[in-house]
Length: 252
Length: 281
Image 1: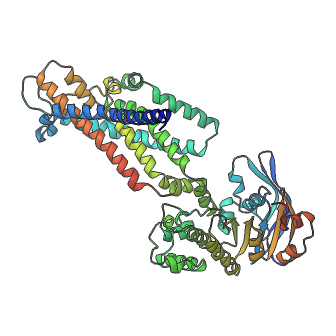
Image 2 (image 1 turned 30 degrees about the vertical axis):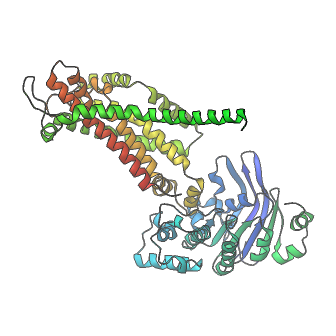
Image 3 (image 1 turned 90 degrees about the vertical axis):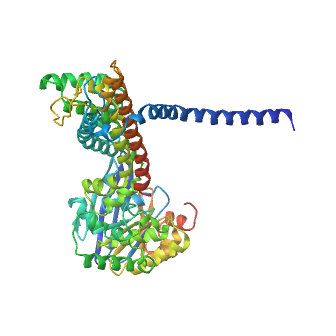
């Protein structure tokens, strides 16, 4: 495949004795939006959290197999380094409640103790907030706390926080499931905008969302990667019966 | 209306009335104690009382300066010992909920909380006073630090446990190492709870007499040397209230009021700080 940025080979993940991800082989191309969908408990979120090594933070959780970023073994790098290159946005907006909007955007620098000149910080904050279409809404309130914003704004602030670190890949774990429809569509529009610079992997249990935003879709079922193809092809002509059943709503 | 319904309404009303009366009964002892101590102590307190040390029996005047300074030093030293240990242990317990060490640490802290203060005083006597060859303020501080510890540990732990995991995940996802997640995110977000635990623990030990009896011992003169015996407010109250002299009783009343005010101010400012520094999650 042309310029795959993330590849996994025979990748499995466990919670204690419970295997959540089974032998996943996937190649994720650069500068695309990949949707990962499937019913609850199918391992899609676990797989996502394995990409930036958040999975191993859960007590008793471990994984096996190969996962690479630009052909470099992710599990051979220090997790801190991995997470600087692969940003993540969570299901519920989680801005740091003790920090201002401004500090939330540069939290990755500030809290890691990376010193930047004021002009550089200003540039990063304005750039990141502009990228997530939040700058005009908050530019006069940068010193206010992040928790003062609405849910949708908070989620975009969290995306800005990830974008500010200039990662190569952005992971989204059901980023709109806690948002209202208008905020959801704002966030979805961002995906198109962001893929020019980043590769986006979006976990969603919303099929319409997968169809709307992604270039390729991966369908997980019972921990297995059942099907992975161009989104259009998967939704019009799925190869696997399980995929067909899922997208026609026979189970969810 | 049906008689049984009427009866139920009456029953409900009387239960409500009872809760109000009993809630008021809770407030009563504090008001009674405050009123009593203020009445007995307020006339004794003046500037002279605060800046002079006690006079010998028979001479009028004299104050509690030595006890004020002594209490302050003993409490500050105790806090310096107990706060870092307490907060660190609390962080450990909150971060490692299920480890064996956490289980035993939590159990020890809970039991420590129930150890009578006089026992802690005796232990401090055998561990500190005897080996060091004499009573000292430092040994008193150690005894009080042991008493503070459980309160600081448990309040830190409880506060940090209430913080959502999503906060920690946000920090980890930005590539932060463990110590920075703790220092820059977890502790700042829980700071109001940690501080209130610290202040309540100080309020708790400020009036402790028993651990100081065999350790700081007391001193009729002003001393700032922590390796020597030192006066403190509870010791002064204990010694002077049990003496046969009226002048000394007056000093004890005045000192009681000062101690009470100190503890009240600490408690009230804890409430204020908790509200002001609370991080809105």
